[in-house]
Image (cartoon, rainbow, N blue to C red):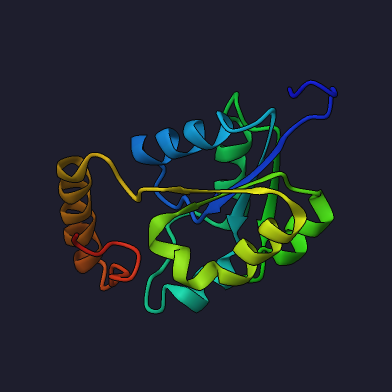
Length: 158
């Protein structure tokens, strides 16, 4: 908590369909930037809009329940729109955390945070490439068997 007893509110989010260690690490890192972590879980509808062809394993309520039960998460909202502008304003966010892969798409949110005197933290998508590559390959094989497609926008090689 800062010196005037105001809780620093942090906003971070994602789909979190098949929860794994990399998700946990990213959420833990986001929590470290403030005192009150608000997590956004992308709605089923929203995921369908940006991960075309991908079928979710868990619905939005199940995914939100997983996130809600992490000890460093204070609040969960299910997000229906790609933009976080309304949530930033409504929740009076101090720190907006985004993965580096989404910076180009989040210019409006970054500008809003700067105008409000807030902070934007850009986190690397992953720090353990080997782990993620193995997990993606196993997931890709499993999805292929079920006739599903892995979203390459979110799971591209670097």
